[in-house]
Length: 339
Image 1 (spheres, one colour):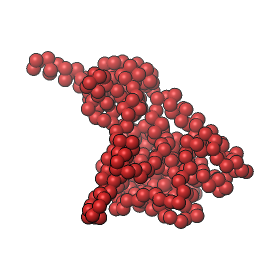
Image 2 (image 1 turned 180 degrees about the vertical axis):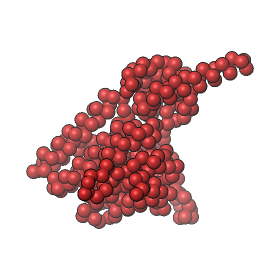
Image 3 (image 1 turned 135 degrees about the horizontal axis):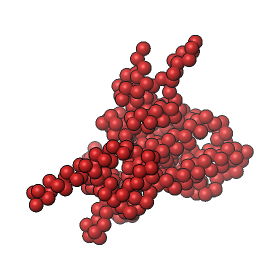
Image 4 (image 1 turned 45 degrees about the horizontal axis):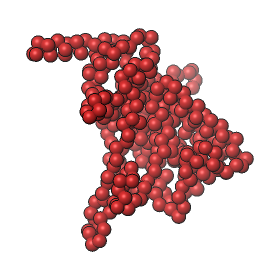
């Protein structure tokens, strides 16, 4: 028996489940939409995590009991096994992704408690959109594939009424009915998960992010984060739309200076992590100049780092840090010889 499965087949099925989830969510009328969407979304994640294990030749099955059939791992156990067997890519913070998937699993398993609260769908949407972004990043990082390649259309949500403001909903601006107890518990768990991640320096944008679409006049281009424009007046309608994207404030995307990172590092092996270790790791992994990790402001002469760097450092083994220190030392010796 093959205890690892075929990672290529697992991955293909995972992508099919994800594309199916997105397609169902974007149907204009589907009374059971959120529930079916989340089921397929979690199925896509479970298959992806098993593909991750399979690729590293780690079993995707539980230990077999006598007289019982073989059982494959749940997404929770597949994620735990990927992390503990070092099959999980260190550049992606797994704790926030796990918290995101747990919230979606709670919704899937107890969806009956949310039937009478239509506006609650905005919370499901925000969690699920973040989950899809996390899935895309893992697919890209580990398998070198793009989820966008599976989707050949673009969708723009349009309707007769604007959706409820998710911030207003989270602050309590929602209808009160007999289902509010379950919803309040769900939101408390969401708040607790966010607080726990923030306390440990983990980027909560992997847990939940509010996404929005803006339709804006091209004359007000400076006022929008993302503007989709269409050429006007006699132009060929087949012309591509114009996309203009403003960068996120680096103080939010890269909030830490080096000293802030050092304060937040808590190595699982208890090993101290100093400024030389920091320089060694960022040098060896080519993090300077990479927008994902680092923002350099030449005019103000400072460097800021993303919260994901703390998670990355904590995921490294002691031997990996020692190798980084040795590589930095060798690099500096070579520089002195050529100076």
